Length: 410
Length: 64
Image (cartoon, rainbow over all chains, first blue to last red; front, side, top):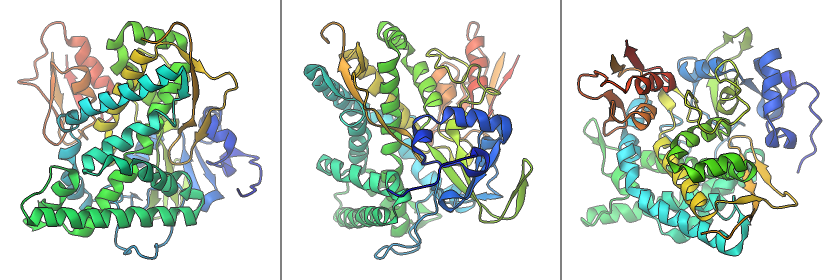
């Protein structure tokens, strides 16, 4: 842990890793929207932070002035020994025109109809995890529930053995949660991911050559062509890195926040237990109120935005979580209205980089909430609330001790 | 009433088809379009307006 100086003015010195901000960022965003809607800091490599909905959306849409070359909230490490420098994570790190075909390549596997295939598996997984917690009468809604779900669904989609799930979880946390403030941890994590996927790709290539290819995403990507040419293996590798890194802690953070909400808002929980048909609308509201993901852009030239002199190479943090709590866009934004119907949230971003896995994430979140409520209709935070939160790029609970209250679970 | 999805603006959020599957359909890439001729059957007007209000890309247009 490094000692950092206390933040004195969030408008000029915000700290996205400040422990208080990670747990409770809402008052900071509210103050910034009033005083300085595009704030700046020199911390963590320097960045700009828009907090108004319209500004965040405008940055996201302006792909001409703001590149996706680096999307992490702190500067990425410059090269990892053992990983070729040209391995990126397309399409999230792509700009037009490459972005168009790189995204086109993965859209079919994440379309709503395609992810529906994984719904029965997801439901079975959630039901069995929730049943275990119900049987014990207590458990950790983050570490023993949310964190278990997306990593196993993604493993299944990649055609990787479920026994890799704990390794993946460690690598993902190393890449982002710990890695953004600890370059050594990030380096080690990316090298593990790179080595693992390189070996997986070699196995799939052999199976494709032998005519025994599986129907997993890695094999699918290896067999695609763009303009009649096979997709380069390094491109497939980068896209697989993206699927692994982007599809796991994001969704588990969202599920964890949803469980936190259910544990702390008995009236909402009981309403959903009584009327499960409300869950899809509730899921959108939970996505709005507890949006996990902030993405970055780099300015491609000197440009003025909302009166701010942004220089070429400056980092902009598109706080979708802050946008989704803007009172100009949402009535009573800091209140979760569990049946909120008018809800143009941007939890999955907006514009050409809309989260490619949004249909998968939404399916997982819906099923995780449904199965939790079935097994655990009554619960609360454990008495000595030891909830911990991670923040920065992805915000959500990491420990969420829950006790089951009321009558015995079904 | 008619609904229409502006294809160049749709980014595949799927909000419209989730809330109004009677009015919208999704292709193999995840992009939306209005079902049939886009005419909104009686009783579904509120769903059509909500789909327009919730589209993050403002790609859903309702002609009253």
